[in-house]
Image (cartoon, rainbow, N blue to C red; front, side):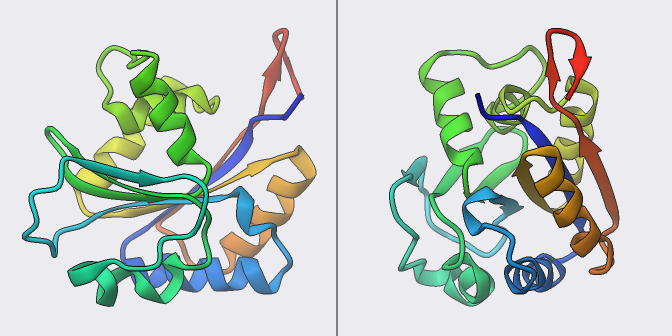
Length: 178
């Protein structure tokens, strides 16, 4: 059984998140455990949704300058148009959680599909709402999920990259924190 422990960092800019991804890679954190979410305010395209869960995104068109520096390091990618938020880019395992929430109609009351994906990963609803607010204000979120030990190591690295906020969420199995 996979533990749903996570550390979530909020960055004011995509450059800050990019620096964190590079530091996590240098520290030996498995890139398959990283997810990143950011609003795309630089696109004129009218895409409703796209995701690629099996490989890395290779071409971003107009978005390449904004996201190309680090997006290729992450596995699985998506572009969603979320009502009330706008165009959103997502990469990493969170894509599968969002798609699963959409396919299973498991959208939790009061949150977007992004929020439902986060909630499905084990992030508490009050934190999900806070992260959605950060997304609406053009902040970039970086998530690392895995075992408690992996998340603790990632948190140490992330704290040195000056995030606006960093929070750890522990998995709960049968009501007991893991």
